[in-house]
Amino acid sequence: MNGTDVVSIMRKSTKCGKGLQLSISAKWLSDMGFALNSLVQVLPEPGGLSFTLHDETFTKYSELLSITTEMGGTLMKVSLHYRPRLGLSGVYLRRAGLRVGDNLLVLYKHGFIRARKIQSGAVRVVKSHLVGRWLEDLGFECGTDLIISSEPGAIICKLCDDVVLQSSVKLLAKTRLENRVPCITIHSSLYEHAGFEQDDELLASYEYGLIRLWKPDFVSLGF
Image 1: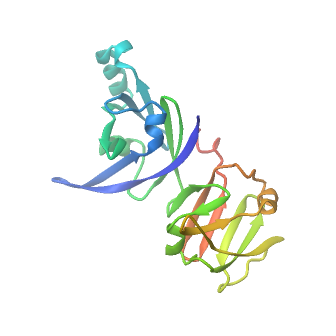
Image 2 (image 1 turned 45 degrees about the vertical axis):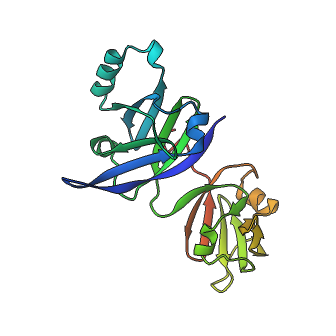
């Protein structure tokens, strides 16, 4: 199983001032083998980081530590904060050129995670159903009218009380309830016009009254 996620660089308060902090805490960590106390090699890479799982039974720790240190990385163990967590702070994030507020696109598979910096601002991974309380915070409450439009490489959801988008494909829709939370369903014709498949994992950039779905260029991001 492979997948994608988005995490952000946060500000961490320390005795010496304010620093950087990255926290990856998700159910998929254990599914990918990153169980509690697992040994992980973290390396800075251009525009991001990589996390590689190591089995201590077959790894000579001192040799791995020496190699990792020479490459500017560190060794760490998976901790537990309600669920498995990879937490990193300070110099290792700066070596990767990261700053507070940066978003990282995360691609994961069993035993390996790669994270790359993408655009700033609010971003999350979505599919053809946009579901959750976060929609209410953007004004997309249940029963709200919106226009969903499509153009090559993007799908845009916009509240109707704003300027109507100029697009060759656009549909009038309403936010509805699914399992008691707001839901927006994207029609298959909009996916086709944008050049997406309905099972694609997309990135959603959002602000009040506006959601833009797009597919990242994994090659240009260094994946």
